[in-house]
Every structure is written in structure tokens, then in C-alpha cells.
Image (cartoon, helix red, strand yellow):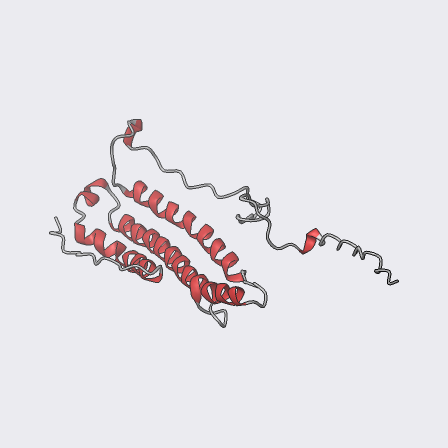
Amino acid sequence: MYAPPPPHHPKPAPPPDPSTYQFQPSTTLPESQGHVEDGSGGFQPPHVPSGGHGKGSTTSIDTPSMELFAANMDLLVKPVQMVHAVLQGASIAPGAFYHGYVMRTKVTGANGDAGLKEQMLGVLDDLANGLADLGIGMRSLSKKYTSIEDANGMSSNDLYSAITDAQDEFNALIKDAGGTPTSGSGSGSGS
């Protein structure tokens, strides 16, 4: 008589090493992701005064106000440049599978010189340049109009001329981000 072989019970496979997982189904990021740490404790926005004489409801245009505005624009340039530097060093290494290649192509382009990363680097360049140009333009106005009497004679064309370079940068920013910039008229009466 024929006896059947004994039942075969395969050994269970060991669980995979958790350090090899690349995807964790979670909606939270570990502490080390999602921010830039430069040792300064984070970005502190520049102080913006509330208005003239502590009332908080008036707007004053005078040399100190223009100088403060220019200084505040200068303070905003460095954080934008820091973000640019961090993004410049970022790379995508998705692995050798179809969707990974698609993701890399969309983010960095096939050769690492296109895609969303390059688009955002252009936007950050335009933003930093536009902020710097605003500061330069306001400083030129504050040198030209050193007293309140001088500032009372400022024309809209003077203001437009001082911020034209910045407007060009911000229009380039919109274009780099995929939008369509609006065109400024610059045709104020001048008085």
C-alpha cells in the first residue's frame, strides 16, 4: 500500500527589515523634514510700524519710512536666498521603476535641469531680485526726497520709476510660476 508523504509546512518568511521601508503610511513628517534650520531659531519677519504717532490708522511717507521699507526688503532677501540654496541641493532618487522615473522627470527633468525644481528656483531668484530692487528703489527715493516738503512734490511717475525694476522681476516671477503677468500702466498724471 502506498503511504502519502507527510504534510509540508514551510517556514514563515522573516519580517522585512524596517529600515528598508521607504513609505510609511502616516500624515506626519519626522522632525528633520519640511524645514530649513540655519541655527538662528527660524525666520523673524521685519518689524512694521503701526502708523504715525501711535494711532495705527495713518500712513506716512517720509524719508525714515522709505528707509525702513528698504531695510525691511533687504531683510527678506536672505531667507529667500537660503531657501534657494537648499532647493538647489535637493535631488530626487526615486528608484528604477516607471512611476519613479515619471516623478523624477516632473520634478527635476530627465537631466536634472528642468521641471518643477528649476521652475521654483526661477521663482525664488525673481523674488529675491524683486525684493532687492524694491529696497534699491525706495533708497533712491529717500535720497531724492530728504524732507517732507520734498516728498510732497513726489509724483506718481517718480514712484513708478523707482519700482519698475521690481515690477519687472515680479512679472518674471509670475511667468516662471506658469502664470500670465499683468502689465502695469505707469501712466500716472505725475502730480
